[in-house]
Length: 580
Image (tube, one colour):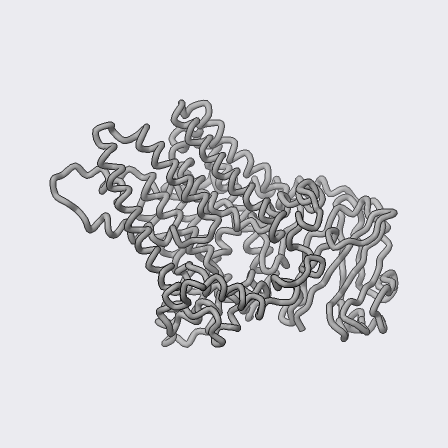
């Protein structure tokens, strides 16, 4: 049955704490798991809580690895004997099929005294991996002259990413991806409905998460399109979850067509190739993929000089072209209905428009440019208002009160608003519990965990790569970012410096807001929450690319892409449960 596997660690003289813990969600469909624990060199003992119910569980093997040390292997009776029962353990014995643990309660605990021994140096292993990756990059780059030009190899990379997305969507089982069950339930509702449901409708109770919140209560419109496309695909007799994943796969395909058609969009789309986590969003049912595509298209429309938006805003003919403005208003509307973290992208776009008007639009056209831009924004806000108004039309003006009431009814006990703080889930309201921001950053390693989950962590944090992968991605990614930033600072002039400074401000504000939310509300280390930065980077890159040294830039992009393919294939596709 579904449960949690927990591991706690304690240094000498200290006890176990819920803040020094790593956990992974166990499901019947999956038998192999991996997750990041902590640096074990100063750890005296580990506590293993194998499940959270009264009953039996079987551990076939267990391996605990620490860089530079011999791995702790548990594959036979003599090795499992090192695990000492602490609490709620009725029996623990070795059998042919593994180590059987029978619990007498819902909190069985085993303890292991950590005794690490020096292992063979892995420096050469890491060096070999890095050399192999860079050798492949150089081999590809210098033996395929035709693909050295960006207009040739960028589409090839996107086609490769699309193929991987299709495979991931097609072969992984239902609900092995983050919170997919609530996304599937929300999208399924719109297969047969056009208006949002009432908050307290019993027919949608199954769509509520453990927090007592349903995606159907929000204003996002991606679930509407997902449900309608799934309905159209019924004649193909696809599994329900697969037809609901089709919309995000289609989004990436449309993105690919747009990139093939527009050379400027091809330049701007490069940041979408540097992380497998971005592609992962398009391989299962969720609303984040739609938000990323909307933000990218809006960024392209504003940045590219020959886009429909800029052509309309700068049109000086006497004819009135209302249709393009109306269409652009329709395009802008979804932007105002995205998740709250996209408010920072909207702020960036507003500042970028001001920068563009001041530095790139001729003075005699500025008034016209601003007037038409305001019209488009007003159309977009009006259309977004209709979507928000539909929620209130169905639920009444006291919708917030109804949502609070249903949350109290349907949330798990640890997430109910009325539950005392000390009985709530330990990840909630860390500041109110007395934890400092320093502890969140230093002890819990918020930045490191968020970074890793932005560059290749799959499932419910159940599939992650070895340390050497993240340690290789980090310097390459930093080098790519510094190449763009330093180029703008030293070669971009005043305009480039202002644009880069504003980008840093908006991106920094987004990171700060995510960190603050983890501290004061709900501790989360999910890199996708920071993905509104991606379309910001796309805009900045468009202005920096003509100034960047070409060969180094292409090598870094190719390296990031190769690393991303490695992670997606050998971590994501290999480790997640599959239907075949």
